[in-house]
Image 1 (cartoon, rainbow, N blue to C red):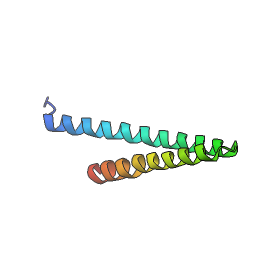
Image 2: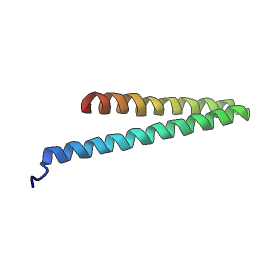
Image 3: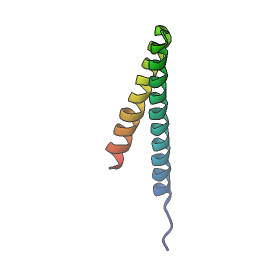
Image 4: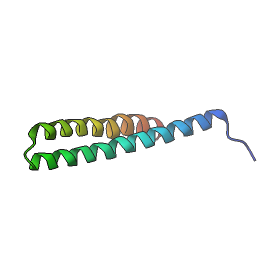
Length: 76
């Protein structure tokens, strides 16, 4: 049975880390956007804008920067 080479092991580890980080950023972005909309409904505009901006940056980083550019472009 052939053994897994160190290059394949390193690539698999890198793929797993990128996937976990992209997923965490995306989920965190969705939760920040949801909290921002809840604060907006409660009349706290400054906190709502801050959370929506933070959520937008997290969604961009999770879905496009890591999800699309790193995972889809390099590994597919």
